Length: 115
Length: 108
Image (cartoon, rainbow over all chains, first blue to last red; front, side):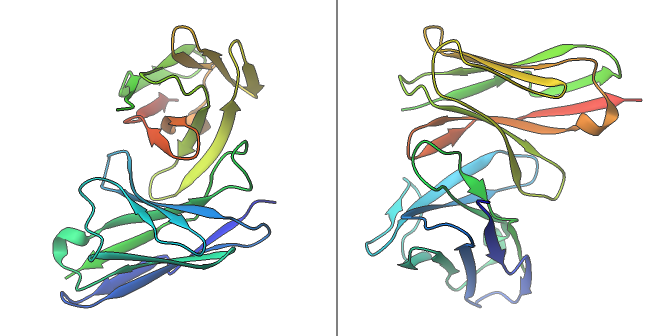
């Protein structure tokens, strides 16, 4: 149980394109999901907390207008990287947990490459 | 601000040896996680430690938590090559903060 699916797994696109990444909890409901960004050989950096039915909570330094988060249902959160540029290239990972006493389960990640 | 520090950041060791990875954190949050990440992959949950003195073991890995010292350890017993990966500790309640990770390379 506790499977988190992330799609797509790999995106290569031109600069200026907007890219949407989906994160789904397949066998449980997740009121809260999290979006992380990871650069090569570095740790995960929390970008934002996605709350079902309300606005996302962004970490300091993360541009809200650049990284749009929508949590439309208890099983789906989306991250849209708007007008992506090469510096946005990174590994994006989402996570969700059944409840606050359970570990976060991570999606397989999305490798985004902006040319 | 919550800080999570791991030590060492890189570890190369021979098969069959024992070693310990340390995780210090700066907040009173006592919920601590250990994750494994293989190259190019996402994270795999290893342990969740929720109380002082908690000890959990899975195979050759054992994790412990000392909330008074704000310290967790991940002990590797008789390492094998398959354990080569990056190990992260993370601390927090709803929102968790990750350490920088320990890249473990086990030589055959």
